[in-house]
Length: 225
Image (cartoon, rainbow, N blue to C red; front, top):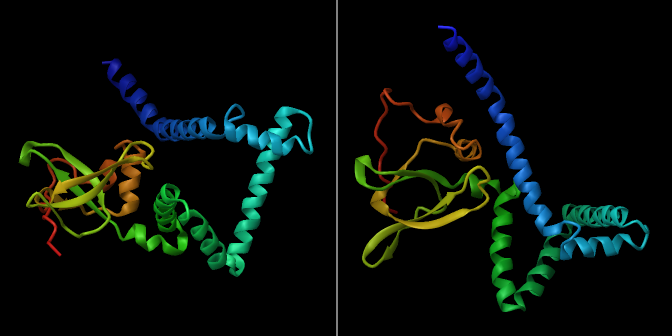
């Protein structure tokens, strides 16, 4: 039939352009998110504009100049950090934040997360294990998650693992869930493969996960530490 090759060609075109569409959608989402935080009409946006008004009268140009000033300041701070002032700067920032109880707790958590993403400490992130969380036994749902620590927590007499289940397609958010230890099994995936699956909303799954009909050893529960 004529419709069959037409459909095949159309689907081939869809799958060819899908990675680009997903990438653009993710960029638009991130741009919109930051626009709500530091756009021209926000409090931070007005602050940036006020910085730029010192050298430019046009409001749009003042906003751009404000951004240039802030980015330049961040760059200079990076130069200081990389040339030996890292410890001094972080000690001062830590001391300042820890004087405010609520702010200190938020800052400490954010500091730990940022340290994990630092190239020099990327082993912390790569050290996380990729796992499947299975619910409902053989016919239940399975969630692909990250295991930050193999330690087991006892809650109400039941052993639990703390796992991170991100959101797709931008896996910077998600949920921390305590899952019964017997429902957490190892996944033969790297962290990079894990992130690829989430960012692509599962499209890259066949590259990393076994397909139905192939022989694969069953996943094993995690050993208790």
